[in-house]
Length: 184
Length: 184
Image (cartoon, rainbow over all chains, first blue to last red; front, side, top):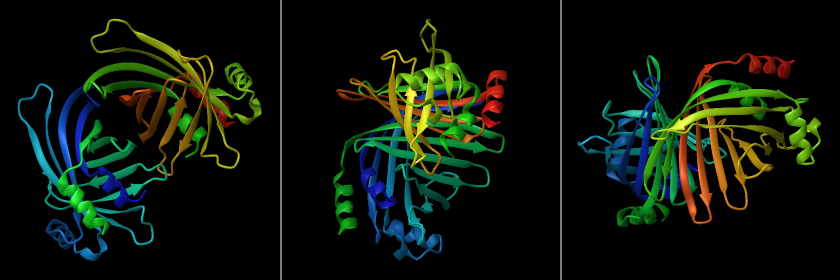
């Protein structure tokens, strides 16, 4: 599987169950959220903008995705909402790895990470800022069940390991349209 | 990393935090357990016995591991204890995959599964019986932090996705000895 195929399979609406293990406190917290993943074509303004921010020729991108979430952690009363745009730029010689341009994260307006897809079709995303190292792993158990883990490391070591099981709730019209455009 | 190295890194005592997502009910439950993983050498009686049960020449095994656990799910009063022996037999031509012989599982006295180690050092273990398909993924975030997921599928589809974050608590004497023997 390549990165484009991975994101195409990800397009749609997902119900996501999340658990975070706080490694130092040995405590867990759970939450649920609705996630929408829309494919963005190469000429989408968000894709072009993100490429330009990173001084990358937008022609190198096949497009990207917009991820939107709305959820709540157990025992919380405040909804967590947000969205982020991801644009992968595969390395020319090793297309199973490359850069991931990302916006919409709270920490920084402009973040570049790395992706690798293993021969087991597990996608690893690594994002590093001055203070936080994040390693995410994502894979499909089936076309309608996506699993995801996220590991956060700060200056004092690994702080949190999270697990998401995501069940497909349907394909949005917008993402189906974008998928068609991207495939055209 | 090969399967032997993976198990050697796994030897020791671990504190394991577990969360299971019930996919149909959209509910989660958490638990904690202590896990001990001991290396078994090629001439350990358990290894020879398991090989013989599967009509496999014990000389093809480098050894195996005994996993012992003792834990409790949140809200439960009954301890879950058990142990299992795993003996991987790598394929001669593709050493990054092969069979995994297993005993000690409640369902059957004798189970053989498959393992694959991806180029991302993620170990996938697949066990299939007449009624249950189980896919486990394990990897090291660091030598002292092991992550593990487990996905269970029954006749009516995927039923449970579990996540384990495991923190090394120390190396047992027995496993250190076995590790030395295995490395000798």
